[in-house]
Length: 106
Image: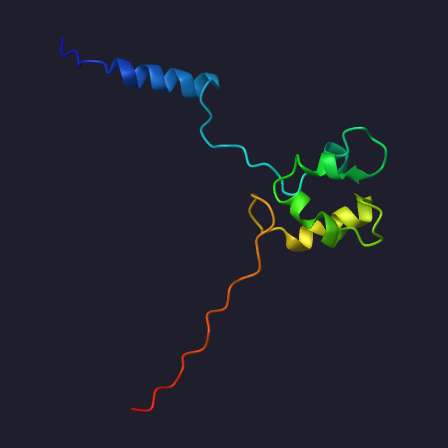
């Protein structure tokens, strides 16, 4: 009988992945999260304090708060999607344009 050695780490890894202990692929979180997930007290608005739970949102609160009441309505929150990149991580800053080259007359 020709027995081949078994790799214990390989077997453990296969068992862990197969049992769901180790994820094969990381689950991607939606950005921005649903309004109802951020509105923790369910009052219909996202306060400055609640906005801290979403990366980048507190920095854009003043920009998004169109009526200046210090909180975001569902409509105002939807505007975050225009600032958010396609892949999570919060709003991306405006691109930096390098200065134009200066012609040199030698």
